[in-house]
Length: 438
Image (cartoon, rainbow, N blue to C red; front, side, top):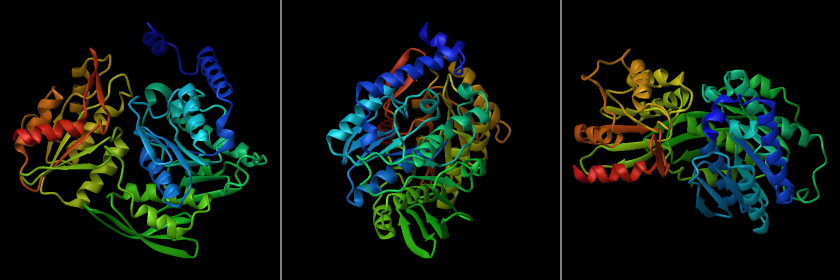
């Protein structure tokens, strides 16, 4: 009944929003507004939030700072890791405030929070006076909830308006001595850059490949990572990332902007980025003794898939076998777009089930298949295999030396939500188990 009402009542319904606001206020008061005693850094965007959040935490901690972090993947307090098994990017206001209180007990100075549009719209982050905000990008996603791209963008903008208000106030005594500037960090390549750039804030760090204060030049990529020259004002340093993909260079530039706002030196930035090992379930590679590899990634949007496959083509595998599904009870418009993108960028495409929730799995798969059929022929180089385990088996059986299987949608998630409810499912362990069978 509760899920039914959530679907029927508009996200912008005043009563619904008042309920969310009430919970946010109660949670902040219950835990005593712990965020006021730390420098709070919010990271939002459609894609790249998780990796950027982890990069920021790694840079600050490598530079000797005491850091807390909340991300889709895990929670960290001064390096101690707790997995995030909730499948939520940003937790409820009560869990968020409880975590912040725990950070305070452990004398954390900086806390990095991956901030979803849902959480911003639903006041889950109420009472957190963000000092620094980051925009990675805004592309097609969550229109099942926000309904239009304008509303989706406006939800993201809430984070920057909080920072703008913080910029106009004196710093609380508790954080006045913690090295940082109140700042916004924005991607010059994003469609909405100019709108975010108009937001009033004393300090702005813009980044990109072609424009911005923080830029990347002389980029070279391989399966082992990327090399680039990071340019900031009159300074330039060479950086070698261990993770591939131009989008990860963008994430590194965004993280650099935050580091500079926190008065971390470029030498410390380089040292941290070059030791960053990546994020579980994001471009995570599993090798087979038969000479092929399986890449597991969380990519859930058309933009994320395009960027992922661009990075894969830079790696130059012999053949690419793509396995694609889509999530139920979510944005339906993106399903055929995702099917077409994967079909365009693979030699063999396999459409399969992902997480249907309350929807008919076959309806979802047929929507993805419809996009793929514009590019490939069914049962020749395009296959529909409903059972996800069997789809992975099919790809592994047909893979040859030098091939790359690309498995998107689940990443590091610990379970899948089927019509019957959640079932245990670690995609990486499933892949390892299947590789051993063949």
